[in-house]
Length: 447
Ligand code: NDP
Image (cartoon, rainbow, N blue to C red; front, side, top):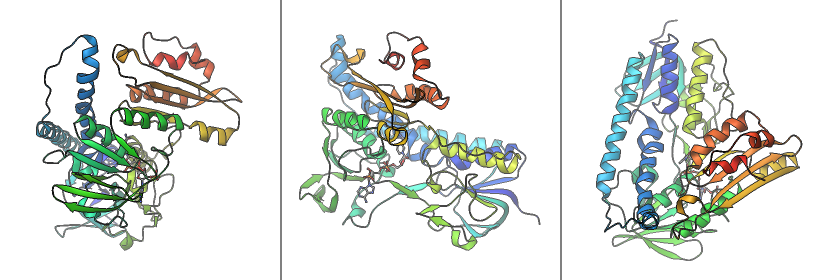
């Protein structure tokens, strides 16, 4: 049996692009289809443009609170959203073009169109062409989850739309207490928007260490973000220039925009999975540890499989798939001690087990924690604290969790993750000589 391609990848985001390029480098004839823009969520409407908005929004605090404490007098400051938006979009376009070029240079054929599975070896493009492939890789990512229960949810935006707004609203209600809600709350506040965050639970950032949750909540309040917990949005009703947002606690808040950040669901709509009999479990494509679906030649990587929904994980899953199938080297992704960051202000870095989970898993643990005012803001009135915590398994003194809230926490945690992944002990942390004066030195001097 001959096929048009050895591999057909659906979705040119982080996972799909990596898999396609690596498979091609192993000699496979590869095609990739993308219905929107090459680069996927991370490059087009996620990590990359978000980080630019984070950088942009941090200037406000630095201009108004920090710079004057170092003797700077800053005159009137003003900010132009359209300048930022357009420059970010230009950069996104530049990166997307690089992804496109790299795929081409790797010998991958690109179809900038929607693709649908016809059967286990056939794909139909939206222009009607039908192509055959020995293997199919689904890497279609996720899409914002908009619950039906919220009356008037069609009036809300998701993070996808924030990047493209014509103008920033004066006020916004953000629903959710996860990554996107927290990051955009700080971003929009920093850009001058009046922000109210509404979260259904007791405390934001569920599944993070309790100290991180409390610290970020405190920082939100200190930056002037209103945080309402134990409440949900029941209804969004349009009125002049904005919306009345009806909460489950009876409160009605007026806002210029409403942002729903209630998680993302695997994007499988209209993919034709049923035509090939690909199984779905809890809305996600069910895969084994080699990212294989229940159909022998169909694989899936990234957010569409809802394992750990982070760009570097999707990239590794894509690479592991390509090595397994096209380089004769069966490779599994290792999901242990995957570090992550929340780009709050200051940001969060975390790796390994929370104190709560470590206690539940090991019983006896030791916790080392410090909370201090960082040097950079010591001359100002800013009372923000750095929080660092090591969670150590008592039986062998191995550091099983590191949790940080503070400037550059994401950079620090990348390094700390090497030590945690390597299974180093608290003594080995302590034997490492400090770099002074830094915040990170606390990680090797904690008593
Ligand atoms: P998250 O899963 O992080 O958060 C979703 C939030 O919505 C939670 O607070 C959740 O509450 C709440 N929620 C879910 N369903 C409902 C509902 N029906 N009613 C009310 N509240 C609800 O998703 P995000 O949308 O913030 O982000 C999507 C994914 O994108 C993340 O999982 C993450 O992997 C990725 N991401 C990563 C970033 C990074 O690495 N820095 C940045 C942005 C996104 P509860 O906690 O109670 O379940």
